[in-house]
Image (tube, rainbow, N blue to C red; front, side):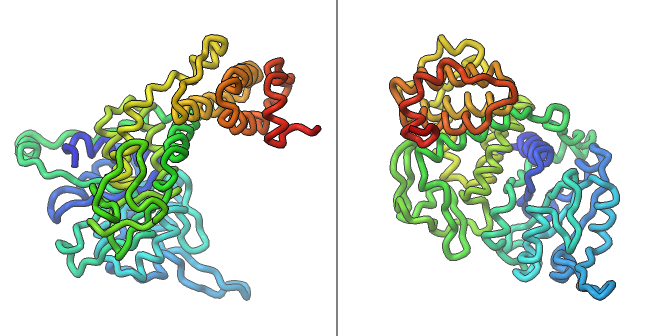
Length: 395
């Protein structure tokens, strides 16, 4: 679960990264107060919307005839956020929203579209919910809505509450807002997640079955897969039940994981914060595999590799080779300058001698992102055979 400090820091990082976030906890434990305090610390406007007292049209827009055409007019709360240009949309008591209202929230949560209006990029979505059996007329979250959110379990620590009552609760963490991730950090994080899914493709999609969601040990046969090993039920994209409405692996939630990894690295967040965020995105089972793999990956810094490509040695392990090459190419592409683009070709040329299949994939990406003014590097001559085999060269 994590302590209150960890969860508050995870919440701040998720909001700064633009990843919709849901706080789970019992009634009366301070979830709403924490979100309101975060908005106040940021000096952001906040709109509180409770789904149980709303209709689907409050999210999908109310049809109105104007100038002979039907327009979906957004409600007043959406118009205020759009006018402000930034702020928090707080979907409180989410598990009291019936399925029809949850369905209407889908575009709001992911795309920030309300009716015919798209909310500004600086409007972030946070939600809070009680477990369905503790909510007033509670409903499980539908898998599509659950998969659009990062799920954080809100802790209740008696000592923390006692100190807060005695001397005041601490100010919310603003970790992540002071130092947003660079483009290089974002690309490196995406390359790392891609390398893991290259090794464990069956974890790319694990849809909850029977309305449940993956949890620890939530594989179809009750087993658990070790890092790099085959998952029980390999090839079956459905998981057994276990704690409805939580995070589960999908391409969308892995992309959110990459965003959160980059934000954590930029903010210098501790490992427990990253673990809480990844668990909230893809569920416990996938997180255990991913973080264990990540711990033993031991990759070189791609920026250091590009600074001295002649000293680079390709790792022998296939997943490490894939990860380091994709990271190097991602950083070179994001930099957009001829010097690092040329250095990346030298790295790929060395890799092609022992791992031509991995080098081909990296070369394809790099060739498609040639910066203006960059000359064809000498290292490309060594790659001519594999580039021809990949269809990147004629003849």
